[in-house]
Amino acid sequence: MSDPKSTFVPVTQPFLPPLDEFQPYLEDIWKRKWVTNNGAYHQQLEQELCDYLGVEHLSLFSNGTLGLITALQALKITGEVITTPFSFVATSHALHWNGIKPVFADISPVSLNLDPDRIEALITPQTTALLPVHVYANPCDVERIEAIADTYGLRVIYDAAHAFGVRINDRSILNYGDMSVLSFHGTKVFNTFEGGAIVCRDAKTKRRIDNLKNFGFVDETTVVAPGINGKMNEVQAAFGLLQLKHMDQVNAQRARIDARYRNAFRNVHGLKMHEIPENCTKNFAYFPILVTPEFPATRDDLYNELRANQIAARRYFYPLISEFPMYRGLPSAGPHNLPVATTVSRQVLCLPIFPALAEADQDRVIETVLSSAWRNRRAS
Ligand SMILES: *Cc1c(COP(=O)(O)O)cnc(C)c1O
Image 1 (cartoon, helix red, strand yellow):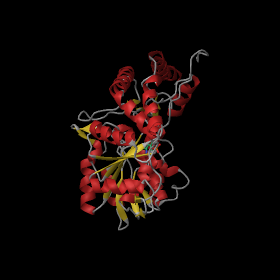
Image 2 (tube, helix red, strand yellow):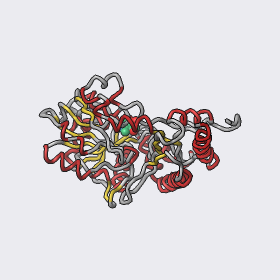
Image 3 (tube, rainbow, N blue to C red):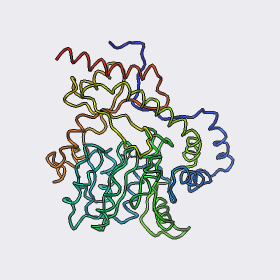
Image 4 (cartoon, rainbow, N blue to C red):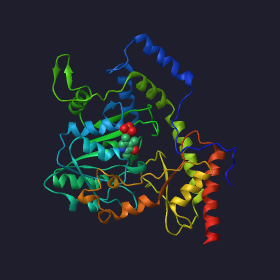
């Protein structure tokens, strides 16, 4: 069935603006000879991102993982933190690097995010914070999470790595909780090759974060904390400024693909598409489907059929974080504690979606999924 002439379709691809548009930025950097440490483009990108996203205080980072690690440091989080096993492994690794014990709570079968109903039973005297993730840019139940945090005096840090530009009722999702952490990795909707940011609530906290990402320096001779090097450089920041100019186009292209997939898979028995509530803006970062037992093939069958047609669907997020060797011994990591996450992780498949995905390649994805549904139905 696979056509030898057909080219490989990756699950995602960074959006790269025309190269000649980047040249003037590089010339500026060469002229200024200031390549990092809060340079002019760095300052400009922080301001433009605040305006674009609708947030007040944002600190750029060299990547999202260092953002997560530093957010936990800035809030002096210790002990235990309740988090989701259904995420990229960096979410829990950031806790591990701070000597904090992750406590895994199950996810909601609808949002696929940390289930607020499962949080309270896991709170102990050692619990200091919650670390939920807006998985696939679908907002967590921020109101209920805030209520629980207020009742128990817990901090809330959102891993917002997927949630660039997402709003609920026209308010940025990044304005909930004590901090939100973005990733600008090449696979994310907005990228600076590698990069990330912490969004926080006030100028004093931003200053603390900025000190922490620069070894703890506050001036030439004063170090106030054991900080780290999390600084974004000028080339990355310049690329971010250029990328930002193209975001409307990027979003429109992703939206078109999302609409085509939804239309094509609308009536496929046993395929569940992920729905984002009406009052939320979408960024079409991912196209996850759940291959349920009613579908005539298994998730891995479909994954392999796509592979055979040179299409790289990805099993995000499988395995669960709680199944990796450094976490699976934790009392909260057992599958009996995480039935929904365990099931979803075995059914989920993310289909290719990115601005440059050609219509012919979208068609190949659609035809492969539909033919799997048909062929396997006749066979069974
Ligand atoms: C990408 C990602 C990260 C890590 O971000 P980097 O910028 O790659 O360090 C963290 N959490 C989630 C959920 C992610 O998808």
